[in-house]
Amino acid sequence: MAELKIVITGTPGVGKTTALSTVSDRPPVTTEEATSDRLAKIKDTTTVAFDFGEVLLDDGTQLRIYGTPGQIRFRHMWDIVAQGALGFIILIDITRDDPLEDLAIYIENFEQSIRATSAVIGVTRTTNADLEPFYNYLERKNLLLPIMFVDPRDKDDMVDLLMALIAMLEYAE
Ligand SMILES: Nc1nc2c(ncn2[C@@H]2O[C@H](COP(=O)(O)OP(=O)(O)OP(=O)(O)O)[C@@H](O)[C@H]2O)c(=O)[nH]1
Ligand SMILES: [Mg+2]
Image (cartoon, rainbow, N blue to C red; front, side, top):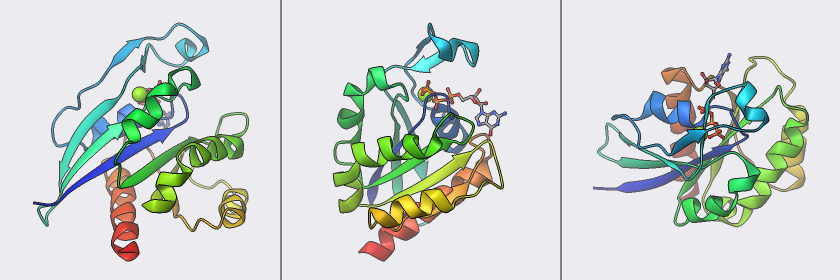
């Protein structure tokens, strides 16, 4: 049986843990702790180590999906969680101060692995933002990655994003 390790990363509070709960076949394993800083205004808990969930595809492929913490102060976990990953989902909250800079942070942190595998980008909390600055940034980096509007609470959206990633991986083979 084929197994694929996939990583969900992205900005604090964007909905990485939510997305995993939405798509995982079983309730995901999470490592939530109470928020204490400005994120506390938005939500009560934050991921401090990683999330883990599983999705069995119709063709028998078992996806093992890991979510990273969003906060920069837990960045030491990012590369540990990403080790051996075969694909990346990057979630960007469009309502933050500088979402393009946010995208650059996550792309550049995981750049080597993304170039060796693939990635898709989900933009949240909007359905009609101008994505041109994102595409221009990716073009400058010579990375051709799909960008989709998604709501992490919506299963269809998250399945579409996962399938876009799987398609990228199959195309790269
Ligand atoms: N209104 C609205 N709420 C959203 C949307 N996407 C996510 N949320 C909410 O935002 C919150 C996201 O929380 P988490 O899933 O913990 O986010 P996270 O990315 O895992 O956060 P960290 O682990 O702290 O980095 C949840 O309460 C979601 O219901 C959206 O598109 N609209
Ligand atoms: Mg989380």
